[in-house]
Amino acid sequence: MNNLFYRHVKNIFFNSIFIITVLFFHTHVYAQDTRAVHEPVIPKVCKILIADNKKDFTNEINNAIVGCAKQHKIISLLPSSKGDNYFFSGPIIIPSFGGILINKGVILSAINDPNLYDKGNQICGELDNIGKGCNPFITLKGENSGLYGEGYIDGQGGSILKNKKYTWWQLATEAKIKHKKQNNPHLIDIKSGKNISIYKLHLINSPNFHIVPYNTNGLTIWGIEINTPSDARNTDGIDPSSSQNITITHSNINTGDDNIAIKAGKNGPSKHISIIDNNFGHGHGMSIGSETNSGVSNVLVKNLTLQNATNGIRIKSDITRGGLVTDIYYENVCIFNVKNPIILDTHYSGKISEDKNIPRFKNIFFQNVEVLTPGVLKFDGLDEDNMIEVFVNNLHVRSGSSWVKNNVIIHGNIDNIIDIDICRKY
Image (cartoon, rainbow, N blue to C red; front, side):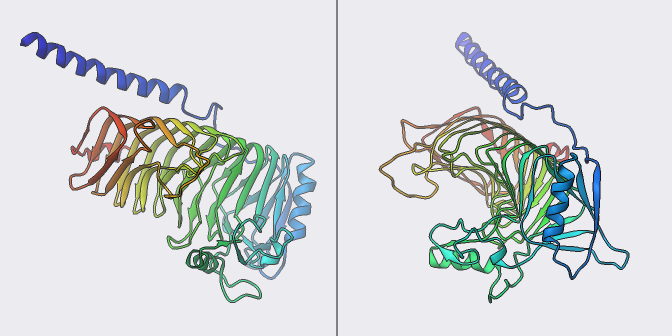
């Protein structure tokens, strides 16, 4: 009897050591941005523009950016001696080695005229069944371009549109009611970028998603603030899409949708992403999906606080857009006043498709995760052939929480012993 007891304790001990070893080994070696990431350095300035609250700066800004980029330098936006601090502009395109320094107190504001962002079909600012009729306010292309400074980029999502009777956000709400798609511009798109930087800026009032890197290899987002109201629909914070070697750090994000959503649609996988030392307020959480067709892997989420959000940690997909999500690591996460603290959902939309794209969530690791207030937690795998696989070490959930567990394998133990001191450390 003693030998059996000893053998049982021994097995528990070595299983625990195995989980912890695997967790830390993978976290610090594989699941992160493969670059050596440092705080961005602001490039040299070759041209200074002075604010004018009554002027359209579209052409002046774009021409200055192109001219300076040829010298591998950027432009600088400064307030005027008269107290003007606005630069109103239509779409801005930043090529390789170009950029904008938006100095403290300066507001680079999107002119709220849908025609300026229209792609040519005269549907920007209208509803349809696709929702892709607008160009973004700012587009970063090529390599070594960036946006810098302590000023603001304002998408004017809550302002009445020119020749319309509604705002961008009201259009998005109407789209939901009418089961349509809104044609609203993103605030910042990064297209096939390499070594791009977004540094210390305040992003506010986006009409749609704030930052979307597409097919980008190398992006550092450092010390930014995103603030858009909680009821502004589809205003995701940062959505890396089919991209790799991304670091998002030292940032605060409050949005009306996903704070961050990592996506991998038909254009390729997303992998090697570090999300470290951040705070999320209202929004729909730290998400992966729902598009995971091409696979999401090697993601490290570390030192994150989530409070007053709808969701906390969330991986979402379904058979219309599913793929393999694997080697995902959550370490040192505190979740407070969140309705759904942890959601792993393979039935996100509930849609049925004959052309199945199976969502598979494997090697999902939780290390030092504290759910400080009760909520709903869901681990909902697709079926017995496609079980979710989770490894946990120090996952503590407040008593009174409710669970949904279907088709999931959980390695390790989940308990109700909350350690608030862990959260105070980060």
